[in-house]
Image (cartoon, rainbow, N blue to C red):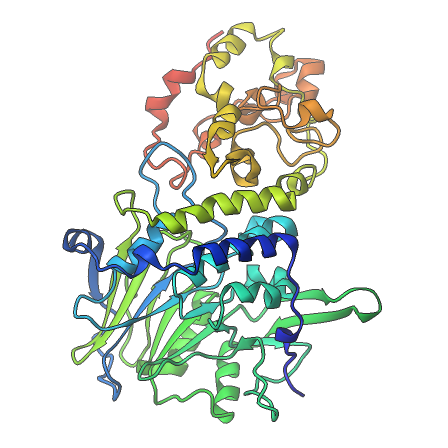
Length: 504
């Protein structure tokens, strides 16, 4: 049984076509991504660590690879306090800065995970992420794209969107389509949309694994021609054994493996590949890590980090394999062409109605639901007036004023979530139960970081006045939004005096 050929079923949408128009205008400009790195930037961004002292010298020419971790929908850093890492435009520049200083060409690899976990249940949101990020990867001359479990929700969209990548292969080594066997191209020479591996001339083999528990269901086509497709995955080691029989996996050739899974999955893959393998985990940790401490004969292993915050370079030379960690910090200059993709992303969010799809999606809120900050004023006038003088009060206005190519940050569900009250609940900001003129108002009682953003739904408390019907929040509540990514410099003790209002 041959693997389903999705390449014959383009599924371009209006917004995707819009992306293609922009892509034509940009003419696939690589711009800053291909420029040599300023020596000072390289010196300040690179940390070099051996992956494993026991990695043998292999019979391959010297090779290098630049690998980026899962984007998780983050084309730009969240927050405005300063110190945030990442950004699609700065990442593009870093790919040029991180190039091997000895002049060797580096293969560019993007790990799977362009779709954020919280966007999986909202196709409009996920589509905007997939289309914009894949288009960005095409513009950055990536050589291979992997898949991760979160991306499976849009399997039926990928064949059409892949036009944004051109000839860049999408690798899903252990993915199964309706139970088909892992195989090479069929007898007619047709290559399935998902490749099992990628191997540049003179370089190692590259593989990409989703968790074996990953599965999804998609519908291709419509009406009488509609077909339901089941997607799933098999154990990574078993997949490699099958590909070895098929002549696709060569255990004597060095392998670089992107995998999304547990420590047990890492250990099993490492034991199977031995010294010829290098494992890079597609993790959801903000930080990337250096090589783990390994026993003799095991594969080297490292974590990639997430949200476009790092570029990892692997170099194989006569002295062995080395690992270089390049951090995408604020002082990395942004690529002007790729910066436009952040504005395109917000436009896609608006075209697809991503914000509307998230509103009401959480259903009813507990404790009587959200009632808005105005309802608190009658009993807590002093606190209410203190709040009105704070930046929290105008948090939604700040989003409305944050424009990318004319598109405000209020189109992004991620931004709105932390800048409003109860977003996602039927009684919260953006609820369809509100009138049209109030639903997305920037100064509505549910806009901004209001009383219930910190103290929880106030419906029951407004009716009873009982203390048990409201929360007395603290530092843990602040850290839900002021986390290490959104606000790296946040310090509760220093910030609290600016908003303190609980002394009445």
